[in-house]
Image (cartoon, rainbow, N blue to C red):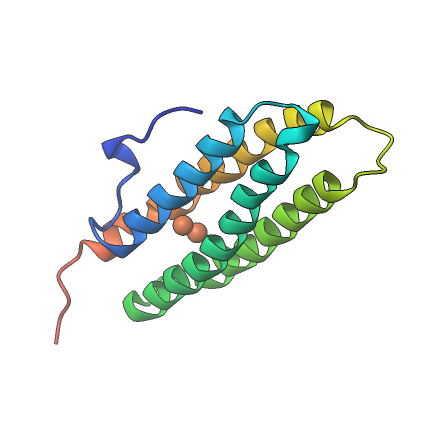
Amino acid sequence: MIGWHEKMCIDHGGLDADHREQHELIRRFVAAPPLDEERDPALSYLYALRIASKRHFAREEAVHRAVRYPEAREHADQHRRLLAMLDDIIQQIEQRDSPFQYGYLKGKADEVLQFWFLDHLARDDLKLKKYVLRPVRA
Ligand SMILES: [Fe+2]
Ligand SMILES: [Fe+2]
């Protein structure tokens, strides 16, 4: 997992704190050993990521409304797709009678989750920066 970088910051406040939390949970999941006996602790990171992401997406969408962000609808659709993808990953890893071994599933999840987070941050979230930092007019 690539480390947190100053360039990933948006508001030096709540959004950044949420992104750092998501980043840290994914980093911990990726760092967990791909062994079956480690499946439950690894899943707990994903459950925490789902809770943190739902809360974060709601917060980010509230910021969109506050700054009248022009791409709010597309961005919210993207959030819904991200949550569906995360649910899919969790379901696959929860399935203990899967024909695929846990180590294989985790390897795929490691790759997908890093992309899941970094691609959305780079392509969508960072566009918010110029709206958030703009002085608010009365
Ligand atoms: Fe977003
Ligand atoms: Fe975000």
